[in-house]
Image (cartoon, rainbow, N blue to C red; front, side, top):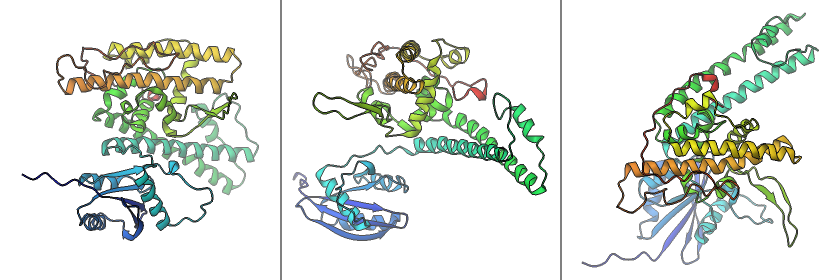
Length: 426
């Protein structure tokens, strides 16, 4: 039997994907880069393109930028066993003098850089993870709609010199105050009533989305990790689900440092020689995950304490996970107080706490993923399952006392039903 021929030539195909068309460029292994043309952005057109480019028997690899068109093209190609990568647009090398941008030039640039290995690919989530993420992002957009409706009402009242003297807004007392407002002109009263009625729709949608998220998480494959993260202070159902669906598989990070950088919670730096200057956090990466982390970090202003709601969320969770959550409380609560005593602003201290919280979350993810792998796949004697060979205590120099995830006991994670819907966030 003759051995199979070795592939000596590779075609690197850059795709500039738009809603209606796809610009195609090809970079050969020999060095030639040429524009192929434009094809319709449909699956059958892509199939014809794939068949034609592979006619000569060469290996073909595809790449395109992440954008509003999503991941359907990558999933379509990978489903046929064809290599395809989705790259981060913000990390594409670009000349400062290049001021001409067209679809053809973008495709040529992608093919050239893909061949040279200078592109950074992004993780393509599976369809279930993306579905949960869409649900969580829809709720976030609805909360933004509610905030804007409330701001319009406050601006309307401010124009007519009417101020509410209560301590907090949008509680039953404040809503009763708004319902009693009367304006002299009928047109003003109609406008105010319409603004007031606009609050009800997003508020009802938020309640429905909260219930939908709780229902969908129960059948999600990443539910054990969500329940484990709920052991932390400030991470109830919504924030924990946001982190898991936005960050995906946390075990792809070898240490917490890259994960902290991924969510944009590391400081910027401008150092040269003996001079070292650090500034604000980069705010790069996933903004939804960073928002959830900072929101959770505000809870560590208070002394370390396992409240009733936290104790309910920790029910039936592994002892290693609850130990990490308690060590996080002790560490982060003390960290916040020490930063405040040192003269730091509260927002700066909370951001620092959020960065260290990432390390403890990574430790729990390593433990849960290792336990699931051990339970799903039997291993040979004397060999640790995937995830357990990396110690979860490797957080950072100041929080390396987290519990080690390596354990021989397998825990069954049962679904948890929150007692109060209003406690779902924190």
